[in-house]
Image (tube, rainbow, N blue to C red; front, side, top):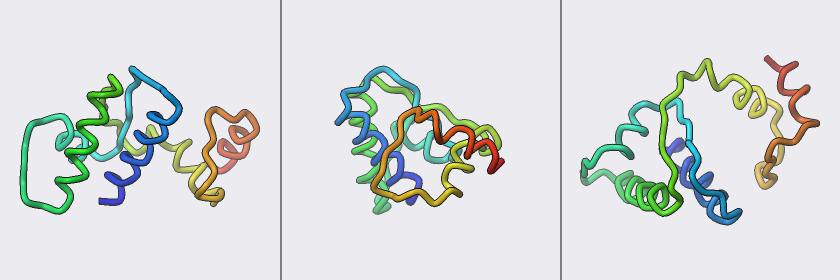
Length: 102
């Protein structure tokens, strides 16, 4: 559920910044499958999945599964414990710190 909420939050940020036609990469193959295929359930998570599907369609985005090893820079940036209310888009000053954390 945490990854679904993180994806939803990321999609909302993209919507606020008017970003379109991009690929959202997730290291959760289950979440990518739930969003990509037309399956329904009575899980509480389904409301989030429906909202994510609607946003992906509206933004012209697509979903792709990546292995967590391919997401090591994002993991390294997460380990920096930056403030959660700050959003960074390709900030050059963060890249060296993130690479050192690898």
